[in-house]
Every structure is written in structure tokens, then in C-alpha cells.
Image (tube, rainbow, N blue to C red; front, side):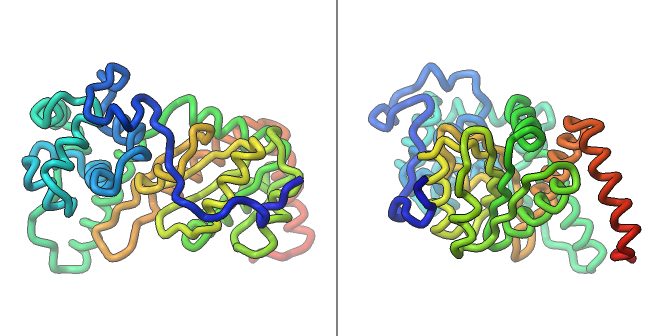
Length: 314
């Protein structure tokens, strides 16, 4: 078995194009027609150069900018050029910026909150008003996150978390909080749950012996560290299933074999908001408990009885 610290050098990871090779970036792909904007962005962001990737990340957070801004204004917001916007639009499979704007306007007309654009109103002054604004921002993030999910991926995640031989919960920095929460809850329902939240030799011992019968739950919210890329490369080489929870900026590290759940964590303040990512995690674990059925409830009941006997909770 190859250990994680023997694996690959840190390099730029590029997601292979799902629908169109890079050499055809300026042609319209028939495979992308009829896909909503967000799916086109998710499927193509990994093949984009940095100048176009900035536009993609901007539109993943606020697709309504296609309605409220022209190509020149969008280029200025993304700190890129109008020519890069044109290449970006064709890479997504649209014939023109106007065609992309028409799709965004149609979504706006039927009331999708994804396409409301940026809020240029004055910021509230009182703390209670600021709190309401903050909660409203989280509500919009929840709507974006819900619309980004795929039924098959959710089902796969629940089944693997319930029935995989072993579950490794991996995350670094703020993502470590999510990994800790997931492992703490899952070990109440099933055995063979492993937590890996540091970059020491613990990573090697966590990964030792993993096979296709296991699953690694990887939380990779932004401010990611280089060792995460090494870990993902190792898991791909060993063909270990990966359930990846990330924000839109993390789609560039996803691989074809990964099962990806995207969370929108944009905040109106200085720091990202993790309401949606923790909410999605809670949902997955609740559905995992249902999937495990009586076996999970029996384990939980026995653990609760042990807490009472040990008198270790107040």
C-alpha cells in the first residue's frame, strides 16, 4: 500500500472538460445546450484559464449580473477583459452574450432569487437591521445551495455514509469544524468512522488500507491547503470513493470520479457564512440515520444509556 506522504508533488490540478475540449473553447457545444447557467459553469470551470475563471466565480455567486451588467462592466468586476468575457460566453455554449443574458432574464422574470443581481442599496445602520440583512443573505445562500444539488449525488452520499465499510471525515482549517461535526454524529449511528483534520502523519494512518468499499467525506471550503490536493490525488489513484463538499471556487479541484455537493457560503461580512454547509451536513446525517434504520437507532440508544451510566453529560 502506498502511503499518502509518498504521493505526487503539489501541482496545479485541472479538471478535465466534461463536454468540450479546451481547443474548442470558442465553438458552441451541442452538449451544453438546454443546461441552466449554473450547471454550465460547474461543468466548465475546471478547464478555464484564470481570466475566465474569475468571471465564472463571480457569476456562480450572482448570476443576475448577466442581466444588470454588460460585457464591459462584467469584465471590470472580474478584473479581466471584454475579450475574455466573449471567450467565456462561447466556452459555456452560448452563441453570444445576448443569448446568455436572455436566459438569465427569463429566469429573473419567473422570480428566481439566483438572478436578482447584486444589492447596491445602502447598508443598514442598526445591529438588528444588520442581523436581518445577514439572515437574509444566508437565506439566499440556502436557495442557491438547494438548487445546485443533484438527486443522484445526494442519494449516493447517504448510501455511502450509511453502508461503506469505513468512513473517513477529512477537512482542514474551517473545514475541520465540519469534519469534526460529521464524524461525531456519524459515530453515534455506525462504527468505523475516522476523523482526519491535521496534516501530520495522521493522514497516512487514516488512509491506510482504504479501498473501493470505503468512502472519504472531504469538506473543502475555501482557504484550502496544499496537502488537500495531495490527499485527493492519492484517493483517486487508489480508486477510493470521495464525497466532496465544497463552495463554487472548489469545483476546480474536483475530479471526474468525485461526487460533488456545492454549498454557497458568500457572506455580507468579512468572513464566509457556513450556515448552508452545516445545514447540508446535518441533512445528510439525518438521512443516513433513516437509511440505517433500526440498526442505527439501536446503536444510538445503547450509547445514550452508556452516557447515563457514566454520568458524563450535564
